[in-house]
Image 1 (cartoon, rainbow, N blue to C red):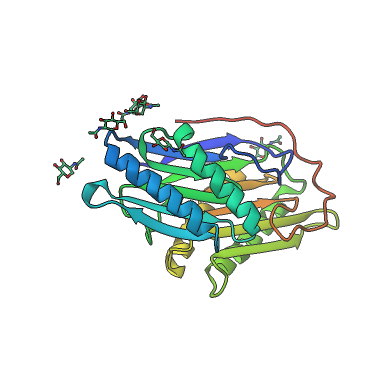
Image 2: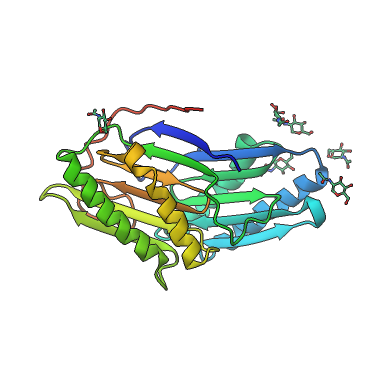
Length: 255
Ligand SMILES: *[C@@H]1O[C@H](CO)[C@@H](O)[C@H](O)[C@H]1NC(C)=O
Ligand SMILES: *[C@@H]1O[C@H](CO)[C@@H](O)[C@H](O)[C@H]1NC(C)=O
Ligand SMILES: *[C@@H]1O[C@H](CO)[C@@H](O)[C@H](O)[C@H]1NC(C)=O
Ligand SMILES: *[C@@H]1O[C@H](CO)[C@@H](O)[C@H](O)[C@H]1NC(C)=O
Ligand SMILES: *[C@@H]1O[C@H](CO)[C@@H](O)[C@H](O)[C@H]1NC(C)=O
Ligand SMILES: *[C@@H]1O[C@H](CO)[C@@H](O)[C@H](O)[C@H]1NC(C)=O
């Protein structure tokens, strides 16, 4: 699959707010078959039900070349209620964001839901990437980047380690007043080695887009990584001293 890069310059005013629009999406492959639509409906319904319990599900529906494969996963740190709400939003959003498309993927802060005609389950997919970064730069940026690299190494190792449910979370005090929060997550269908490979692929974008930035996230279909200087994962850290430092939002699509 060709690498498509979508780039958003961005910062969050309300990092923990939840809304129905996905933060990123990918749609491909128009279809016209009613059977495909029926299978997609079945897959979405299955995923919403099954992933609401335990935060992860894979499923498929149909036979032969009408088969639709699906995967849904909530970020490992979100509550069951937030997880269900996110999955329900995604289920409703597919028709709006990817109408009549048989390869559809929606990324939210709290969940990721995907379906397609190719069996992608258990395969690491880094064919499509979305990158967000804060337009604000860190003070003492070279030291900051070094600390970001260190903590990304830690969360990536956490996500790959046994019993982590493919989730890594870490924080580190950069200065007395600035804490860096980081998260890494793979989809739970991946083996540890595939997870590690996906996460290491995210790091190639850091020098290009995340350098000096106060926050950055790289979203693939098989793994995501993110760091910020405010708490954004659960359980919520009480340190909110940094949360006023985000500003201007810009969006760019360099194709
Ligand atoms: C898919 O359908 C959309 C909307 O009907 C259309 O704009 C687009 O050109 C189609 N793409 C392909 C590859 O056929
Ligand atoms: C597909 O569904 C539409 C609307 O439900 C119906 O009008 C059409 O006849 C169906 N086509 C086939 C091939 O079943
Ligand atoms: C799907 O399979 C049917 C029967 O095997 C075949 O006639 C049709 O061309 C296939 N469609 C596609 C899009 O591959
Ligand atoms: C999405 O659209 C399809 C085709 O029009 C329809 O069958 C399905 O029920 C819709 N799904 C939702 C959740 O609205
Ligand atoms: C999706 O397909 C249906 C049935 O073929 C059609 O009525 C509808 O306009 C299509 N939607 C889009 C956005 O192309
Ligand atoms: C932030 O740092 C990046 C990377 O060095 C640089 O390209 C950009 O101009 C800086 N932005 C500001 C507002 O200083």
